[in-house]
Amino acid sequence: MKTIVLIGAGNMGGALLQGWIGSWQHEAAFNVIDPVAEASDRYPGVAFHTEAAALPAGLKPDVVILAVKPDKVVPALKEVAPHIGPATCIVSVAAGVGIDTIGTALPAGTPIARIMPNIGAMAGYAVSAGFAGPDVPQATEALLDDMFSAIGPMCWVENEDDLHTVTAISGSGPAYFFAFCETLRDAAMAHGLPAATAETLAVGTAITAGRLLEGSPTPEDLRHKVTSPNGTTAAGLAALARDDRLAHLLDRTVDAAKARSVELSGAPKT
Ligand SMILES: NC(=O)C1=CN([C@@H]2O[C@H](COP(=O)(O)OP(=O)(O)OC[C@H]3O[C@@H](n4cnc5c(N)ncnc54)[C@H](O)[C@@H]3O)[C@@H](O)[C@H]2O)C=CC1
Ligand SMILES: O=C(O)[C@@H]1CCC=N1
Image (cartoon, rainbow, N blue to C red; front, side):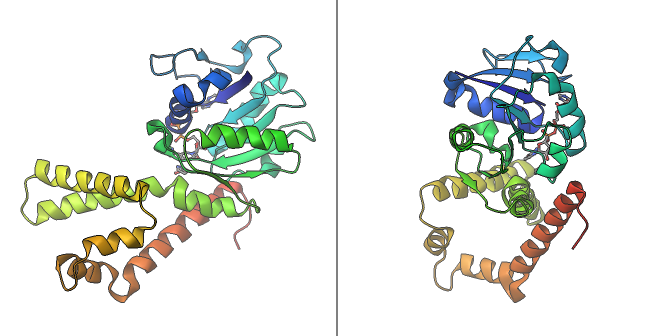
């Protein structure tokens, strides 16, 4: 039985906890620290504390997951410091904040990893990518892999800097799809459909696409299945991609999110 401390149970921390309940909880005892989050039926068997000082005396967890805003990472670590043992692995899901910065709040040699999940954990399906620092033992990396694989696809990157790209793609990505869905709904209304019908069709179509993608080899295969030669979809897609504008738009989108991640890391801009 592993002991896990989750610091911050807001949108992302709460989603991870929800994801692990049922799929991985049998492997672990969870303690949560959050000044505002409370125990609820959604989190059966999880101990909630409003501050690190309220953790059980002598607790040295196997893993501490930091799911606070980037500027709270170092202060939150300082609060939990008495509970960090030599084998406790610190895992941050915060955007930007690098292992060097996290290490400033910890004794030298503390194992530190960063994992960027996404909000899909709320529904038990988060895609995640991680980077394990040099002091993370292989067995601990395997434990983290097991935890995050329990709630969706998990991969590892070899360069910490690649987490800026990961954050811009899969960390922020759900919001791009939601924004696309909102815009499709608004276009349906602009073309005369009632608001409720527009919402049902736009949201339902997003769910259609997601469900099919789950079982499909590639998005290209599915696109071809919808697109009759010289039909309506071909006309719509041609407008969407004219002059490579969709590719340019997404390139700019990823650039902007990456740049913000670099800013949050405090690293000089390149
Ligand atoms: N929201 C998302 O979709 C994703 C967020 N992240 C990362 O997750 C982190 C948290 O983001 P959200 O959950 O969206 O923010 P949030 O504001 O919803 O949650 C943060 C939680 O931390 C708690 N908190 C603040 N100070 C604390 C302290 N000293 N000790 C314990 N708890 C404390 C707050 O009460 C709050 O419940 C961020 O660093 C973000 O970059 C990563 C991937 C996706
Ligand atoms: O918007 C943010 O900064 C966080 C990181 C990825 C998703 N949400």
